Length: 246
Image (cartoon, rainbow, N blue to C red; front, top):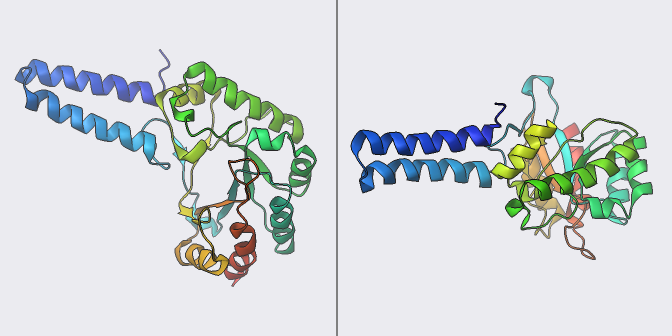
């Protein structure tokens, strides 16, 4: 049976509980301690974006290459994404844009420009629902495929796009879908904290103070809510790229 990592974790946790109860008897300690340890392991897999407990997750690259990966979430945005693209072009930099499908369908010409300029489109779900981690198997599959199909069409490829789950959360259901599709899930190692920031210079300084070779940097060129914008990453990006070059 080709089990995914999440199913192996669930089966191991159940076996540990049963084994402890069989060995020591059904006492609060024999059941409570392994249950608490299993709950902590499961919580780590669900809530820590870089955790590989439920599914292998890439959170950084090889440091010896002397490079970092710039990633942008929640776009494309008709106003801010072009600003980001122009800045990247000025510094001859490339980025991965983890796009929300419902934004992508409204900005396909912009997405085509992103691909033509050498950037990569990743899948950040269709709707970016905050309840997405409670989706069942079929709903996860439908959401991922809806965005992936549009990305493949724009990119002119049959390859499965990189996937970044909303808020970085994972679940056993997502892990099963990812396993079946052989998804590459990508998290991050440096968060620009640009979602609620007000000062682009402070945002740039935060990134430059933390970034090391091999890091994956998370920024935002869009917003998960319609009609709202996050301009800080676009404003901080020239400072970040200048600092990286220096």
